Image 1 (tube, rainbow, N blue to C red):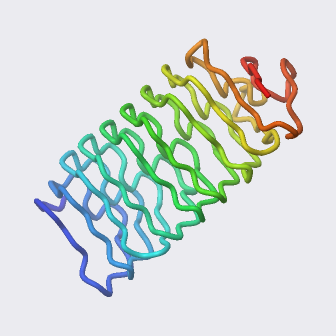
Image 2 (spheres, rainbow, N blue to C red):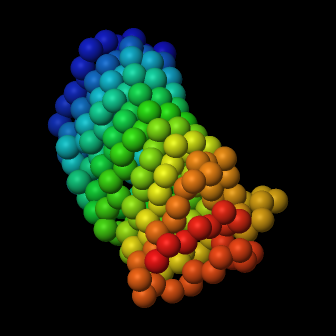
Length: 224
């Protein structure tokens, strides 16, 4: 176990943060120079005092659980041209995180990346998002409005499971493909345990929307 406190800025030239390198340490702020291109599994998992994570570079590979179970995390600045958050639970259980701005280049948000971010109120999606996978925002109890870009093509089951105060989901593109996980019916759990008054808004002229079919969630109120 690494014992650190206060801010930890990696020196320029460092390229990798190894799996578990800072697990359960006392670090409060982590600043990554532009040279860092790889953050390993559970690198900062369980850092209960971690308050901010700042990437100064343009892209990086961030593996599963890298910043999971960080109950003090409030600020995240992602690499400016990050393409993928394509591993599981990267920021899961960051229960104080209220806002996340995703770069325009981001294409994939993998399973449970922001699961149980209970204070999350605002998510700013970029212009390139293609895939939202299973449980990506499940148990985000304070998320009220979501606007998804026209580039979105596929969504997994239970993306918004237990988002209790979610009031609206707006799609700017055509209906995404809804894919399955395990024994779930195809896409039918997308809105499970959300606000019963939740409304889906879709762009006029968009295609693929059908209400009450196996291809879309059971609760799919659509307003054009």
